[in-house]
Image (cartoon, rainbow, N blue to C red):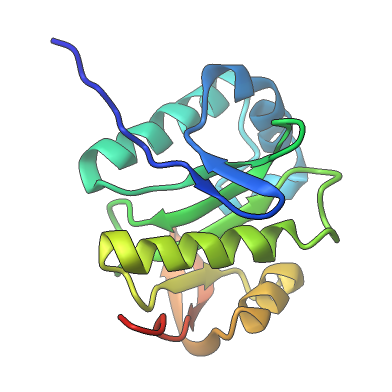
Length: 173
């Protein structure tokens, strides 16, 4: 049996949102080996990082949408991940994001999140997602606020307390 996975490619001025590939493993494993990954289930070892790639691809198969790898358009360098995410245990679809080391402060997360949110509204029927954010993750709180999201409630995800931010409904949806 052959399964063809058709993950859409979304482009912005500087970025390409695309499917994660096996050759992205090195940068993903480096991210998950670091403390930076603590807000997205890390740290993880290399084998667990490979399973993250497989899990992201599997989410696309099961849900019909998922996280994209975010790459610099000019170089195809992986800079992070972004997209709608709704694994078992989530209340509803989340707009999630994270950047790999060295790519902060360039506006990549904002640019990618806007594109992912608009695409999710137009193609996946997700006009007003939530974002689960650890209250100590000041960078993600700042990004959610910049995206127009507002604090909605306290919750728990993956056994940890978090804050739920609600993104405004995408215009036209």
